[in-house]
Image (cartoon, rainbow, N blue to C red):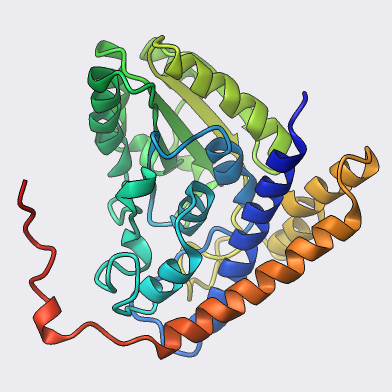
Length: 321
């Protein structure tokens, strides 16, 4: 599989940005300065980036409560995201969305979503828009193994097939729906569900960026060509709890430490591209340094930014067309 050098570097930077952003939030949330709930994407970076590497600003995505990674992969401004999570007026949603509701419609990012299974119906609407406008766009719904059991998701799979929509349904299966193992709570297989709705099914190892990139490319190409929807099933693992503060008593002792040591998508990415002499270690190290500086700057700016004021409460509630 041939991937352009600039795509490889851009993808690594995006994954590294997600990792540093989330690891820093883990530290900052513990200070009590961040309002609301925070759900981290650490360990899952290759999925969001591998999918979004095939998308443009014309294409649409809908995310989940664990949405920071998808936002960054789609190109949402990191400074604006950090300010939003801190509830500041300079945030991408002016501090009124918070961690679970970051959106940037100008980039096709329809929003993270606090409703489990809330993204797939939105994507059907976006995909219908792309189809009617004939703009060549596709719509992608990210959802978890827990959301795969929601009626909204199953209805969306059906509707997308009936209307032959340019949609891709990406099931990010991290093994747990909150604290319940998917092996216990999900009957049958995702492959059988895709077949039940007459759509092609693609499956990959979410710890391997190149596997995700290849499978996502096929699924997205299928939808973009006007052949109807496709499903992509990504197997991965989250390193932190369902939410910050989750004691993770449902996970085996040493499970996360083992994942960090043996299933780190960033480590495997670096190892692969340097061993085959596609990218030099120095180039990756430069990205690491630049990203750490970027995240540090974003945190400092967010903490110094103003909070929304009383008059902002009703702003952006209604839209005039």
